[in-house]
Amino acid sequence: MPAAATLITTSAREQIIDITREVQSLVAGMLDGAGIVCISVPHCTCAVYVNENESGLVADTISLIDRLTSGGWKHDLIDNNADSHLAATLIGSSVVLPVIDGGIELGTWQRIMLVELDGPRQRRISVTAVGDAAAGGL
Ligand code: ZN
View 1 (tube, rainbow, N blue to C red):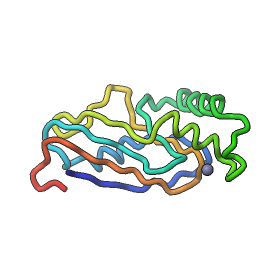
View 2 (view 1 turned 180 degrees about the vertical axis):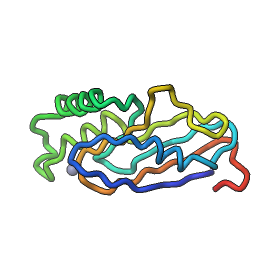
View 3 (view 1 turned 45 degrees about the horizontal axis):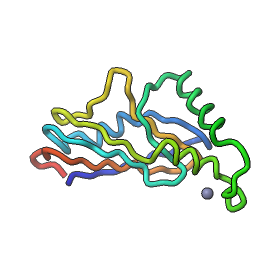
């Protein structure tokens, strides 16, 4: 089963980064026909979603996260980042997308977005593909 990973270094406590190009690079050559890819971030305070990369919407998404997760939480007594964990739980740590003709099927405005929730840190992005493997692929 083809799989690959890459690292992204974030630069703020909360940050949303368009990782579509990095993911597409990882997927290139994995499948030559139809299939699916799972894009996963193996972290407890990081998340991934698919939506438009428009600066106002990205700022709104951060505002929504802050509104939903602000407040005193039990986990804050341990390391003061409950809001980061809770946002990661709400958004999710993976997305599954279809692959057609070897490429990720995304709508015109859809982008794959990494959400840093307790940075800055180095984050791992893992991609696993299932489908018609490319000859000589991973
Ligand atoms: Zn924690």
